[in-house]
Length: 178
Image 1 (cartoon, helix red, strand yellow):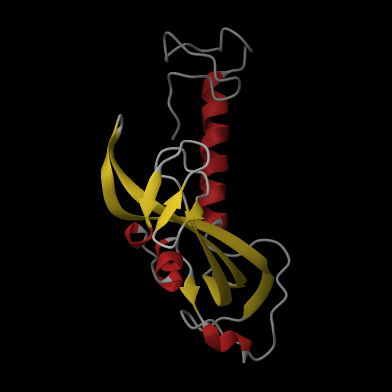
Image 2: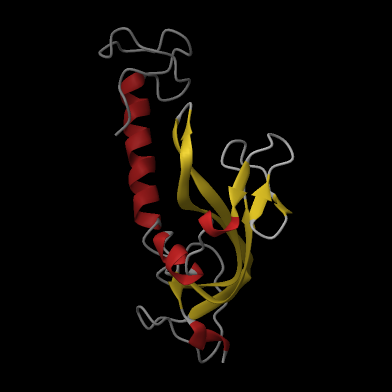
């Protein structure tokens, strides 16, 4: 249920939440709240299963529930992994950030489990101050051309892309591409 301090149609602030009509759009608030509650209940019901056309791949099943699966377009997720602390800045401690861009083959089942099979990951070291991409300055240090911050290469960390994807609700299913 939404906040009754705002009109559900035009979002104007209601000084008295018990008034009959909205002072701006003049909608009958009790009916609009009922309509909105029905709409939210309908969305909740629809979120339980896949809506729209579903084109299953014959012979493949979801490893989580056993339902048929559908292949989707290749998708991309972006992650930032903090490395070691390099010092303190105006907003607190600064860590050596490493951006991982994961391109993967997405799948879904009829119960809308999010699956992925093959993937490719690309890591790029970022400046801890301005979050722009660093460049190599010799073999031991990365340097930011914008703010001149230097970070030792050993301070950057990477993580397993499968574990990163699982934190976002994706399930690794390499058997789907056999």
